[in-house]
Image 1 (cartoon, rainbow, N blue to C red):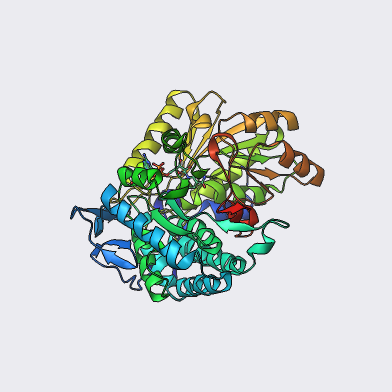
Image 2: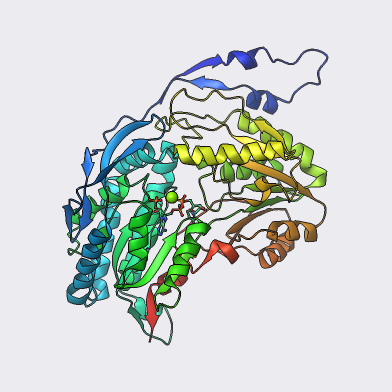
Length: 509
Ligand code: NAP
Ligand code: MG
């Protein structure tokens, strides 16, 4: 634990209340002054290799083309490793290996035996948790406290949960029996590289399927490190194949004729491309796409708790969350108070080195993503919304963006309609319950929503009327492997997690 130096940032040390100003409450004074901590970087060795090959048929294999691409640390812009670029020919080799493994071993193995492998994977992930957390933070930019306390434990939890299902599949659909599909192709994004992988692989294996999976181009390290875990677990060769690469590799994974099902998590735009290219085939499909969630605060809500939920919903993890609460709908009577509390809170968010244990907001995942965030924030200013940004100092190197809040936002502003995928909150107001519902639902997306109110009946009404796959009440961004997750409308279809997610990987007989 680092010692506090109790230095105040100069800019704020001068901003003390004068006699003429209204007195601040002690809480406001605490939140108004940022105490500086000594750096507390995580220093353990993540055991990275300088070069990562494809994981096919249980072995690390060089790509047929011999091509590699660099992967960087977005907080330092320094190269971490070279990653193999899989061509369609490599993807084909992976599918052949997966089909052989399905036909000869995995598809025939009793569930209780499959379960043992999945338990072993879960336990090995826990054994290597620290390495994985550091690797995830270095490659993705998210704060170490997020990868250490959320991503890695939750990834292990998904394997534990699904290991438990493997020998109980006769209960997953009462009165029906369920069979595996065969080989499934999966493509995942960069915001939760290891966790999204766990969401995809664990139910597929529990059901008896084999897998070909592609991680995102900017975050392949933990996916390929996961191949080492699979080797250590003694998983039969070919059951899981990991093919790193770019969009073209992803297209090859989605379109391969051996894929009985494809599961995609990413942008709505790419989801639509995939759906168009698979129209007319008999492949089963699940799509987890974008979101523009509303966090709705009523005037009877516990406001301090709500402010913490809002901050958790959009600023932690740099807003790189598909279900991020990127729109705040606040009831008019408390709008001013909520906005003031929110500004006070984001002033003291620690933005910087993601490996530092005190960091709240880390690095934006890529230069490209930072460009998209800047462009949308500029549009908000041009369209007349009022921008407040945290006065924090950003590191000189790396991709960082200040936690930002837009007020005076209207439904027609781009920042109220488009997914920003960054630490940017748009605040809108409403007067009545019906207006809140109408505004929240006025989006092509429908992944998640949050409701903050003291009234249970209002929570129930909102959860029925909001067209969102998840509705959190008096909390935000809470996950559990037993709970299905997925979208309405352009946020996609199919569910991941729980019994429903498992069923999406099987066929009912
Ligand atoms: P993206 O550009 O759609 O990429 C997602 C994945 O698809 C990446 O692995 C990408 O490879 C690959 N890909 C790109 N073009 C492809 C194609 N034509 N065919 C097949 N695969 C292709 O999305 P992103 O920018 O990485 O991720 C952010 C988006 O994901 C956001 O919109 C967010 O809302 C969404 N998301 C949704 C969920 C959910 O559960 N609903 C969860 C997380 C993220 P490259 O990396 O090589 O481009
Ligand atoms: Mg992309």
